[in-house]
Amino acid sequence: MEKAESTIAQMRKGVLEMSVLAAINGNEAYASDILERLKHAQLIVVEGTLYPILTRLKNEGFLSYRWEESTSGPPRKYYSVTQAGHDFLNELQSGWNDMVSSVSMLLTINHSTEPTNI
Image 1 (cartoon, rainbow, N blue to C red):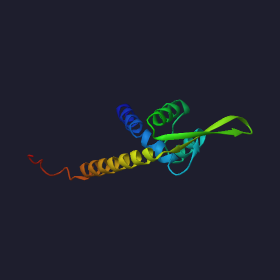
Image 2: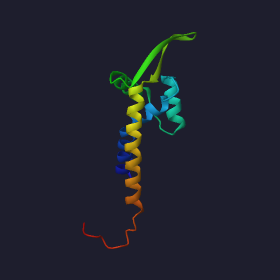
Image 3: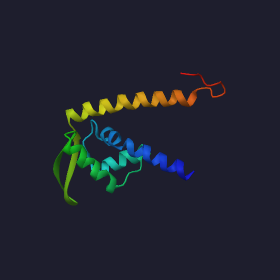
Image 4: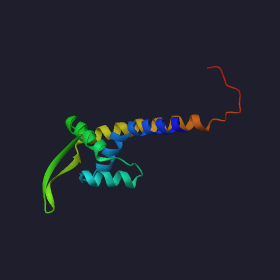
């Protein structure tokens, strides 16, 4: 089971950028908002993982941000998805849907039949 857990962790890492963009898409968000949205979707991510992803997506032009003063501490950085980010998310979603469809097809093949030569 340890190998399965490791592989599942790697799969999660592979979709985190898409998940972060999806969590922000259409809803400007502060880092703790993003973490809460991911948690609600049962994707537990810690701040130490989130901030490098946000920085990378911002540097690639997929996110923008604005500062807002806070009454309970330092100013907060609110992120939003740029048009390039929307386009990127659409491409990722299309690729994800294709991959899920392909893997689902493989997982549902009746394995009791003899393999065919391709």
